[in-house]
Image (cartoon, rainbow, N blue to C red; front, side, top):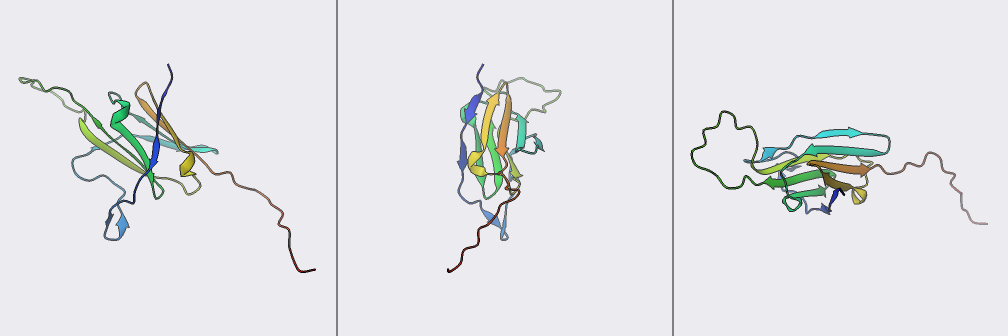
Length: 138
């Protein structure tokens, strides 16, 4: 089974509140659980988002913030259900994560496989040592 590719979009600037960028969700949106870690080569975000169609999730980068948002469709509602627990979030969800400065937003990739969204953000290559030639008039 091939993983499904998700297109990373650079979004328009976020609305600002009190002169600061908003970095959390507002209103009746569900919180999306994530694992976030780094290696020497990349910054990684993993999130279980089972039951989501590929068209119902978006991944964007806006001013150094990774934004994951989408909607989990509940399907038709049936009358007469008397829940003991209702812990699954249905509807709109969003999560925003501040990216490290050394991540190249143009090289971020995402895929959705077996209900797990994986986002890989490669770190920019650092030049350890470089000799600089001095130019002058001769």
